[in-house]
Length: 377
Image 1 (spheres, rainbow, N blue to C red):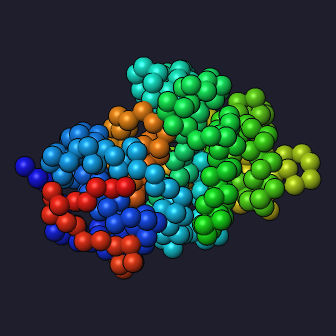
Image 2 (cartoon, rainbow, N blue to C red):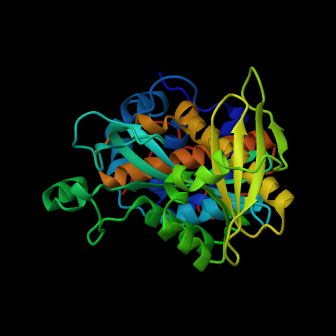
Image 3 (cartoon, rainbow, N blue to C red):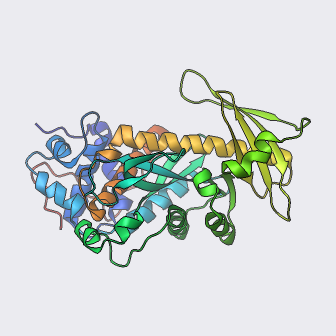
C-alpha cells in the first residue's frame, strides 16, 4: 500500500522545493528527493530507507537506497540554498547562529565515524557518531542550517576503514571547533547574515574557536568552562546587580534564570556573566562587544534562550523526521540523509510560519505516480 503526502501539503512541498532541487543535476535525482522528503515528513514509523520506501515507493527500495547512499550528488548547492532560505526568514544583525554538538548513538563500529567518544556536555562517553550542528535563531524561531560529521582520529588514521566508508580523499582530522568554523565560513559565503555566534562550553573553552570568531569579526556569547567561570560563580561581590529573565519553555513551567555580570580585565576583554537557573545549576558566559553591564546581561540571556531553542530544533529533527534512523554506513549516504532531514525540518517550519512558497524553480518536478519514478543516477 502506498502512503502519499496529503494533497494539502504535497503540492506545497513540490513548489517550496523548487529552488533547492535546482542543485540536483538529474531529473531522476530530483524525483527521488521529493519521494524521500515525503517519507521523512509522513507521521509515524521508522524512517530508514526500507520502511520509508514501503510508504512512498513500494517495490523501489533499491532505487531509493541508491539515491541516498550511492548517487554522487553534491550536498553543497542544496546547503547553500538552505542558507539563503534561512537568511530570508531569520537572517540579519539580530540573528544568532548557535554552534553545538549532536550525538547519534550507534552499535558496532562499521558505520562511518562511529567510535566511543564524548556524547554530552558532561563529557560522558558512548558509542556513536558525533555531529557539529549549526542552527540559526531569531526571536522564538530556530532552523538547523548545517550538520557535519566529526571523524575521530582513529578513523582518520585507518586508510582501509576510510576507503570502505567512502570518506573523501584528503580529508584529515579536524577537531569539532575547526569543523564549526569551516561550516560557518560556508554558510557566510552562501549569504547567511549573522549578528552573533553562541556556543556551549565545549567551544567556549577553545582558544582556537574564540580566535577564529574574532578573526571573522563576529560577536559572540560563549559558555565558559568551569575553571574560567569560577570567579563569577563563586566569588562575585555581594553588591553585584542582577537581572532575572524568563522565557516560556516546555510545560509545565517557564525557564527562569538570574543573571549578573562582571567585567573582565584587559582591553576589549568583555564580560563574564553569571547565570543561576531556578531549577538548579550555575554557569558562566563570556560576552564581548557589550558596552555595559545591562547590555552584557541582555546578550547572555538571549544566548541562553537561543541555545535552548537550537537544542529543541535538533530534538525535533530526531522526533519528527527521523534524523537518527539512517542505517547506511557510508560518508556520502549519511550526509545526504542529514541534509534531507534539514530540508524536511525547514519545510515544516515553512508550514507552521504560514510563509508564501518560494515558487517553482527550473529544478522543480511534478510527483510521478509510484512506480514510475525514474532511477536516480
